[in-house]
Image (spheres, helix red, strand yellow):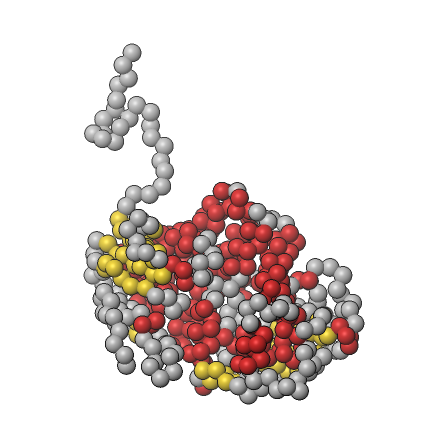
Length: 435
């Protein structure tokens, strides 16, 4: 075990612990400020569900900002499609396809086609903890099932965006036009998500391809196998075995899948942000105010009930005597640990908690600064219910170390209240206006 920096109070960031032989993170899970340790499996499930919760709030804010379903879904799908088309374009600007062929050990006799898209998509599903399996895959067609989805709480918007813009990573990787994402999805509430892709060279244009990409539903031209022929999964096997095997036999440890997920953990949230940018919605100051209000509500609802407040304190191992900002500071530290951020407690006392984290990684390689005000609203709201309404959370940009985002948890007044004319709070007395 290499030496690692001991943080206040005896809390070590995961990113500091690196295996010297492999260069990989040790991923030993999370530890609270009161030395309560969480397993790696719980940490993995925690960060994926946290991403889903964030996506719910961004998605719901988007419904208010852009009430027209077709407009907002098209903006998000078009944004994601553009990003994927760039990533997998013929000139391969990021070297993505070369890295894919090498890492997945693609045999030279496998042609460009849907098989390549299938094995890439399967690895992506596994690292996002979408339990399921590939049923059939060839160069002309693949059929895949998802039985368990941590992002199901987002709703149909996530499914539609995945089918629309998300399908373009398959199109680019396959090297030819596909009938993209033709699932027999009955709707949200049906855990059995069935996806089929077919190459247009063999199956021609899909009969349903007359509308938006995100609404091309089945049945596929090639037909489908009967539902329920395999046991329904409730979690990915690699969470138990520690290893994921791709269809080509290459393998990833669960730690490697976790690392890959935490490199881009805020899925769907970033898609909403991209769609809002695409349509110029952020030009209106009201857009971010709507987002803040949504995250304020989400934060307060998360722990507003006494039983949930009690449960999270027990989960963190908070002593009964602690009733201050350290409670929230401990919870925020779990989020930062789960996201595998570089972070530290700069201060952890009864009066004040200060947490620093690497801002570039926190904002997804600096590409999504809109995440920071959303987190501030979210954390500030949680302070009101996890501690009490005397506490606030603010971003201290003036004193933050270079490259770091500094979150301060302290007592403070907040909000706006109209003052009665002719009255001052200085001495509590009424003020007489001179004639």
